[in-house]
Length: 265
Image (cartoon, rainbow, N blue to C red):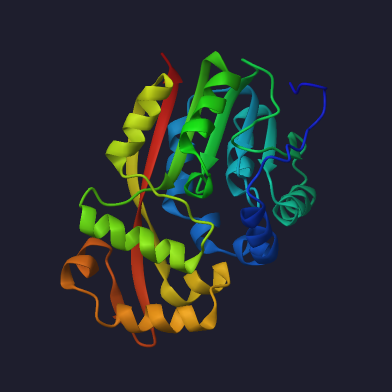
């Protein structure tokens, strides 16, 4: 399936992103938001009633999506650019005794798969860290078979500019490897301009707490304090949009999530 018959690590990657997730990998392994959120259930639902030969999960992190979808595939390749994430995925594969998953370094913007080689490509909770959604989607289109399926699940945001700008600012301040969470209309535009058609789409939320959210990303203490103080004074429209609620010594909140099952036109 790969250019030289093996997993190839492309060096044209975001080094800062790789360093960030290498250092924080252990927090993602235990993250409930990643391991058992409604987006994982929905991406499985979007794939159900299908059977795939060769699949790849892009930006797999600890491998939660790859593990779930592997049940529908003959062979699943869990890919990432972060060695500690892939080590975590490999450990889980061994513990779970999953025999149809391999792992490898693959850059989402320059995939080492040959053209028209994969029956399924999935990407969940990763694309907002990619330096170019356009390049990523182009690579998915290139390596996916004509009758293949692309499953996308990622953070989205409000169509309202004020809400959207606040959301993007918070995500970047919390983790400066965050690039952009497209709004639903932006996702649809990017997908259609690449040449895909959306066969089915779903919406859900990822529900989190402030302190676990900043801990998972290793946000500097001084920045956490500034953000906390600002959250104490949030406008009602932002609190309503993102379900922000003060709960004792923490905040609960929800980010919107967009999911789509796509096919080549």
